[in-house]
Image (tube, rainbow over all chains, first blue to last red):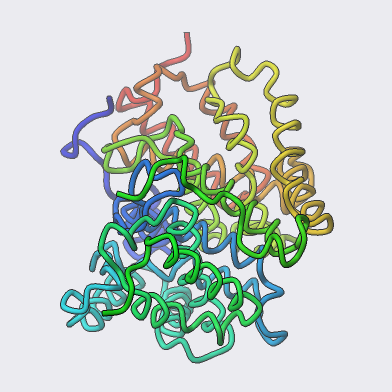
Length: 216
Length: 216
């Protein structure tokens, strides 16, 4: 095994040559912080049920889905821009952690925590680039542009796939109800309308199998 | 925990409505196979040294680096296309597994294994889309176009970052020599020339620290 934390040269090479704020060193510092997203664990399990998913591999899966399903979005959606948005949409979690979508209490204060995290993480980058990526994250969070709506749809559709094809996953684990799932999935109808019939069909079938709880 | 493997409805919903070869069902089937990339373990460790990286989160990290470092490539590189290439560049590993770059014996027969894997995995998709993504993978493997050269450069540069900022990582673990590292990193000089000075500097420093072995 490699050395412990104490002998890590955390400062990217080239910092001195370029000066402390050298553009390349700042990007490397950002990329190294981003590495921590691989340690942020979500509630969703992999399809094979072996473990929970982390936010880095989740981001990859969403970006891949956006490529695959680009034609389920409206014609005004720029799929390449959505992919960039999805690559950075969870980065604030390296500071703020993942918040389980169905945990209302944990979601209190989430916005403020994530806003501060965004300042820190995107603030590592050279100004123009930091601003651009932070703006993509804000657009995703607001969910109001066609690009953001499609990105959010992917972010809802992917856990549905994993839960359904993984035998119930976090729905069963946490006793999630049909109304909760439908509320969570609603943005798909707007952002990727061509997927909506499949979503309803999956939810119906998962209810019939007892994987999603009936509404009280 | 969800149910075991036996009660998994592996067939995507909508297969019947669209027929067995329905385009949406085929894409979902592909996305579910892609999920297995999260279980393909590489030799590189995360920066914090806690565990080895898997190929899905590695793909995410490369795509993010391609966004961050687009201006280190030549002007003829289409960064959005490189991102798409990187999202699919390791998918054959869900069939063929990851092959350690420094293990010459394991690399024998790798091409043929991966070609067969590509047929199976990209063959799940509707024809046009499968052809497009498979062509991106082949372009990456050949490494001859400007886009592929930049993508390959990211694929070499990221493990260098993880090894160096993680205290030596797989270099130390496997006693990799300076000549081996420089041979492996060589494509960076061509694909992302603006990074090359930093690569040489990192290799020199890692040698001085004893993390990379001297050449015999």
